[in-house]
Image (cartoon, rainbow, N blue to C red):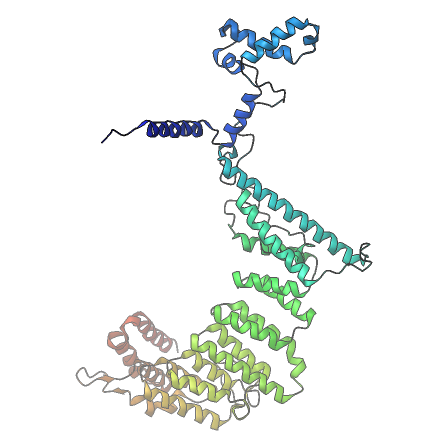
Length: 532
């Protein structure tokens, strides 16, 4: 078999290597490309002259070529004879250098500036730079469309007529939505190209007429607050509309946005309520929105203060209709119970419930069922002290019989005896369910005080939880709270010895964590007895 001819393969390899060498010699970056263009416009051997330190370092041939290049571009060329000109051009052609007269300044690595990351754009590859230029052109086009939108809006506001159609300029919702989309696109391009961030309000045409007022921090502030960008922008627009005393639907949306980020901002809530007053927003619309906010931020006080303001504002519109009041009270209690399902001891919600009871007159159980509702909560959790407190408020603040301004810890002769009897029996029944539960014991004591009755009136009931006191082996105490109340009953009756024994045993065994308190009670009683 004859040997293979490898000439074709060798030639292909040579072409590939030549192509690779040619590709490597091509400018890779924007700066390299500009430098290559600059080099093409330089005189022959000018680069060598610069690198070697002057003309003296060039050969005679190189010096001649360098000088001839300048002569071809000067007016002195016409002064030479035809023969001399011919010889000059011959020598120029022999240098095999392009003859260009474009004046190009020598490029600098940083003349294109820096990108958002601080990188020199001159270090971009050519494809990267072309992509950047394309995005800049796109941004320029979007800005032009934005200027057209602004002009159309201005013409529409002035009622001008389009000379090409003979019709008035009209700014449609489609125009506004298209501008919003353009601005979102512009915001994305600015962020990509320059690192600039445009907020949701600066990209919304609806807010173009507002000049935001930014937060001004003192120079050299030691603890400047680093607000999130969205929050800082929203607040700057809020300051502007508040300074202009503007009340509008867009301001209402603005407060909603800020509250979603910072529900504890008291000023925003007040401004929102002012907008509701000026715009006459229906109560149920605002309540529906507020319910969602309350469920998202369970421990927020401002939400419930705002709710109180709403009720105060709208109550005069329904006060003349008992049925409307009743319906509203029912719906509010339903939501309050929804809140309690999340947190049965939420202080802000209980405070609002007391306010609601006073404002809507939810005292009578037959009409509003408020007492039944509270009993249901106590049945569900007999240790819910908040529910016990509301029951006490509901029963002993009823304006039908309670003395106005009567303090919670002082007797009230206006409270009917049957009400006191009912509440004593209720507290005793709950104590029997959980004798060591402090809530019904405190409630029982409060009922007796409001009813003007002595603590000793329930002595028999209390003593069943304390047996053989002081007898080490036989002593039984089923409730430390009963033992405490028994001490007060003995002291009230003047039996100081038994009262002292009760406090002593509380400190020694049944409530040792409060030993110091019980010893203080003992000393106080002895001091009072000695001084009397």
